[in-house]
View 1: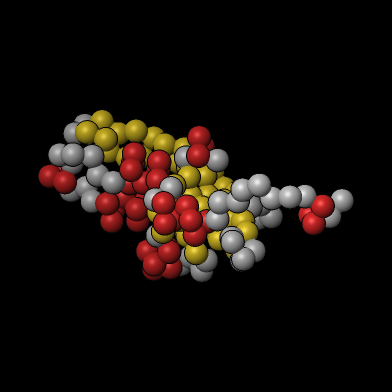
View 2: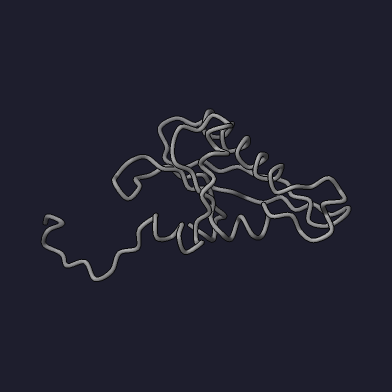
Length: 127
């Protein structure tokens, strides 16, 4: 059965998800780390872990630094994998002075709105 046999009731594009804030475009930062495709992180990952919790700026934490950690570890995981569209890795985030949280993260490469390869970095519950 061909796709033409189905009526699409609703479709939500990646572009719309970025405009709505469901996905956070980090392509420029990702390119600086060696990624070659359009890259986003889910808003859940971004707002829960990449954005610095209140009071941690004095501990040397920054959103730029936390995003850097995610991107570098995603790149290492991607480079060590072969023949898969997703990789799993862990990142330790300082959540308050003296307390870190180890977070499972997924990086998935798949088709974008125009079937081009795109990367989405997310928490398991965002999958």
